[in-house]
View: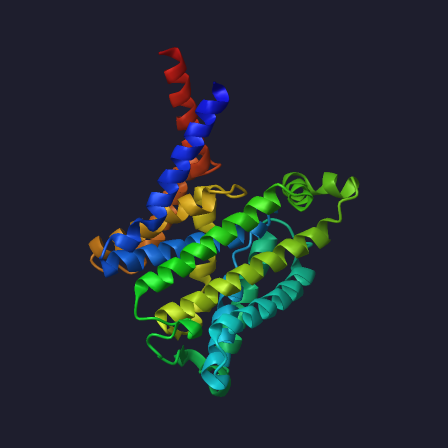
Length: 327
């Protein structure tokens, strides 16, 4: 009987997730669909960050570096060599993994705020380098993606539904990667590093190596998100893709949702991105209104439940089950 009820609950949740996921495709509202695309993109980026920042517990605030590498690498190869971004995004992912190795070797021995500062510094260095590469990368002016209109084989379409389906697939793949890591020996090692690194090291876990693996996976996934962003907006600049704000927002989305969990990054994106859009529309164009909103929501969630939205929903669900059992 208990198994039957559990199966019914699982089926209900699966149907609800499916309806929420495909709903925007039938809205017919292009503005709403654009918000949905960006919400899913940030869910994907938060899931990418979660591998290093959540499961491994390494507070990186410089993932904008990998996002920018993915955006610029695929765009440069597309604009200058005509290489499809479907291929270019894997080149960008490889470059991001190499960057993660360089950053990781020099900073993964640091902990807490020192590691976070080191990751921010890496993004700032890359941003400065790109801004000064006028002839190669367009400098502070940025780069425009060659507009081909309806060319799915070149990662372009005039239909926002095209981009929504792609980013929805990206989120599904990122969820699967997180799920596999959480349930693997690799994930258990990362959890040990997160909970008590010295104890894990004493038990023979090669902590630096596994943190480096997590950083490489996280960087590659984030770079692929950068390619998607470049093809969706058709313009990139150092401020947009290497900005410090971006790295902070990716981390905040995951932390608010519940770092180290499977669904936390998705819940964080579903709360923050629509809220940001509302704040932008009703703040009268106040500069920094979105970042103030992020800070306020972060304080409220951490004050109520430091483990994030996932823990809040779990608490409500258990309370509802207990009340139902009493009745």
